[in-house]
Image (cartoon, rainbow, N blue to C red; front, side, top):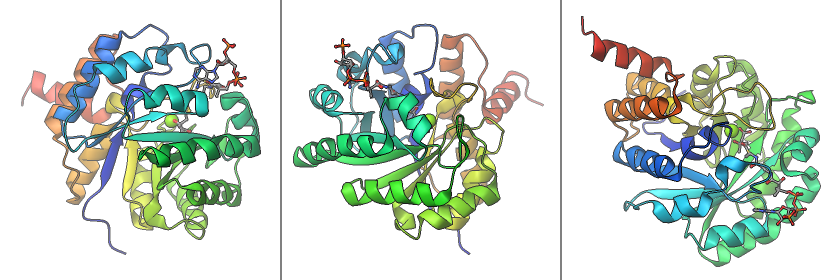
Length: 304
Ligand code: HMG
Ligand code: MG
């Protein structure tokens, strides 16, 4: 077993991290967050989502945020699009990549995007076709790949089936979400091994929420399985409005610290990322959820 020598991290903080914030976060703060993340070395940033503002009010400023960012060459900017209406609105803001997002559990699919898994696939097909025709890359994201807040344990075979459908439809990569962070390394590995029989492992990414504190361990297990792309959110921001109690994504700085320790290249400056974690946490009025950010900030405040 050899671990990869480099890993791609996608910061989903501006989207997944902020979508569930109850207090309105000004577009200017979201824009500055993107700027700080790219300055810290992130090469892909999930900026916002083009979903219904009635369902997710925090993302209602999607176009303002996308149009407000100063793009840096070499950085990819992606946005979530659940349907053609979202895609058409997103297209005007020139994303490099769109993300169609489904689920491995029927109940979650209905709660999150108001349709069955089969209906979601039907909706995604024209979105994927339109995006590819416009030269925009398409990523697939899946929720509840380990457990579902409504249905409990999820069968890895069900995950593999939806992942394969998204991949065959034209998604260049499928991000596997442990939406409620219930996975442990053995269970995560089992799911990945089943999915990798249908989708090449180099086309899979991990998206692990840290609700039970297992996300870093699950990332290590995923590295061992051959996965080399992970979603994470600076400061451990995040949650899903349709998964009560789900806490944030794994913190990007926790993942960078892990990778630095393993000698795996990410291209990300840990100090600049910790600055960003401190900055956004101050804007939100709470300390960073990330242990690494807290440790580094405490050490800076009181060096031994
Ligand atoms: P719907 O109500 O079934 O849609 O919602 P509809 O087609 O029947 O349209 C109803 C109304 O919504 C209409 O407006 C449409 O214009 C509007 P009205 O006539 O009532 O004024 N509408 C839209 N508005 C803006 N943008 C759109 C759009 N589509 C319709 N794209 C819909 C279906 C998918 C839109 C809705 O269920 C929705 O927005 N859901 C929110 C989903 C979401 O953002 N969830 C969080 C992100 S996913 C996530 O966090 C998980 C992930 O991180 C992985 C993990 O951790 O598991 C990715
Ligand atoms: Mg998520």
